[in-house]
Image 1 (cartoon, one colour):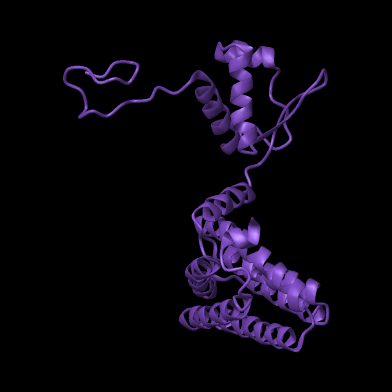
Image 2: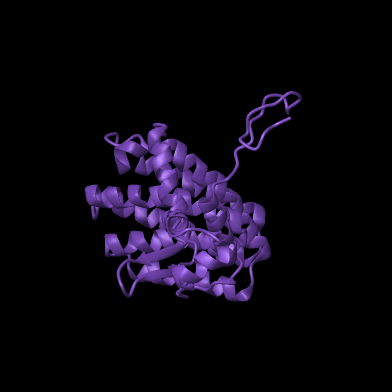
Length: 261
């Protein structure tokens, strides 16, 4: 039998040890659930420390440890001092993206690996979007293309519009899990794009690549309008591969660590 400390007794569970959560973790879990369920809304102040200590029957150090857990997850912000306190923040994908970047750096992940992952996520999303799109979503795509065309002669502004179009394709596909995963990958891809702009913005090769990418965006919108899912996915896969080939020409950066480190 396993004791409360997690050590195995006579019969046991095959040697498995059960870790009992700390009280601070239990308090953090309760507050986390309240935030993600919308019971506590963005910008709302949490009850006073005294009230929370009474509600959870914990000490001040335990409560503050729970606050540190939630603060590290960017679910609350804590202001110290006489007029301080904790306020709720809405969970954002950027937190996961930053952490994923650190993990990928540690593993020595190549940029090609990241670009390949982007293709796995984005290409099917283009197909889904073509099959499911609404008239309103189609207009958002057309507006994004028109904005990019207007910025064609400004390399920095154009690449920003270009990246936003890619994010929009995934967002409008309607799968929340893929949207979060894409945000993690996009954090790195966007950094690579900016690095490339710094290196060759306005060069003949850069201008050609931008115009080729823009034509792919226009073609995708046409396929989405026609609801041609398979063709949209194939076009986007080809576009992403061409973008990968172009962006990976900079051999000085081959890993995520080279880019973000």
